[in-house]
Image 1: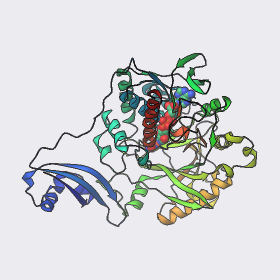
Image 2 (image 1 turned 30 degrees about the horizontal axis):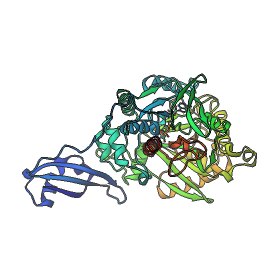
Image 3 (image 1 turned 135 degrees about the vertical axis):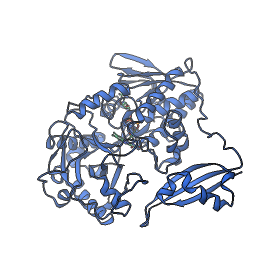
Length: 521
Ligand SMILES: Cc1cc2nc3c(=O)[nH]c(=O)nc-3n(C[C@H](O)[C@H](O)[C@H](O)COP(=O)(O)OP(=O)(O)OC[C@H]3O[C@@H](n4cnc5c(N)ncnc54)[C@H](O)[C@@H]3O)c2cc1C
């Protein structure tokens, strides 16, 4: 017999089945010895009250053996002789598209401008030592895309569009811990992700697909409104009837490539701001309502804030508990930061993007004249301003949070997790007023809701500009093809259909299915 039971436990009780076996046996009115196994199906933290509690949903097996976990029901067939489909980009969108194409019996050719994950790691180490950014190998470009050296948070709000459990299953099949299927807010960690991404590559290659690194798509081949393939590295052509374009939002050259080829793009709302960093201990104290912080049994605390200021959203984005701030620029004269965490989230810092919604109509007049590319040009300009006001290299402009809110320059800065280093700059002045004034108000609100958040040791770094893209590559909502180009499937975050690893993976699977529908109809 199997029974599902919901438990509300203290963090210590929830930390090990030995602490709650008695509770379960009592609740179910069975002997402890009759319980053969207990499997936690869902775990969530309830930190709303003064006492933090853990809620567990547990499957309890009584007098019977638990079945083997019904996961990994995945079949990657040999597709070497099957119809090829080009997948541009090996981020979560591209990789999940490629894996699903194999399941559907099509042969993916994954084209990636960057390097394999191991070689890429060396470029990231150089960048963190303040070397100029390699425009083809950085925190956004290379095997696994922007998701490889990230926190690996896997939650998404867009579960309605696809099967989130399937995505978790594919991650687990390729080596992610069982924990991600259980936690309400799963995350993998930057130390574990590269191994999983390499395993995905192995599946693709062993199934007869291809993964080409250091290979940049420089042109789409279109004949009479139908895609026929792509040009790579300006010299060679690869042919296919379907191309899944999953190039992410940092590939500005891809937007220009499409624009120059007369392939329609649309301006859309996006967001920009800063990354804020606090001591993790302070966030633990605030979120777990205890001067003792998180103690032995709770994870590093996170937060999520949002409010409206002057009719625009101001919100936290991609919060990384126990993490690091990293340089996420992709080209010269850009200053871009982002955040990541290792699987144990054990750094002494907590960081998060804090961004302001920007609509196409908000742009200054001098940018509006640039038509559909206006948002991209504006984003570039703010990244350049932060570069100039930083170290004019990889050193980031920074300001104590209290000084930013008070509109003053910081005389000094607290220690930051950002390895290349930070330099004091008047970010309240450097950022456009429409962003800085809203951020200041937003921070004041967050400080009221979370007492202690406006702390002297909290610091902001500029700029968090790559939360999403100011452009969308349009596609038909049913066929998922670009309205002008049959066989072109704009996919993932760069195309404007996802935000984050999990939703990009879901979109990758959807595009694979759409390519299958095209080829088989
Ligand atoms: C540091 C950092 C931390 C993050 N943390 C998280 C997190 O914890 N959770 C979360 O959900 N999201 C996180 N994100 C965001 C997440 O990584 C992205 O949302 C996700 O990777 C988008 O997936 P994608 O496949 O659409 O594009 P991307 O991951 O951006 O992949 C696009 C790929 O296309 C390649 N490419 C671009 N142009 C070309 C071309 N012309 N030819 C060939 N290849 C090309 C790029 O090199 C890249 O590998 C983080 C991002 C960063 C930078």
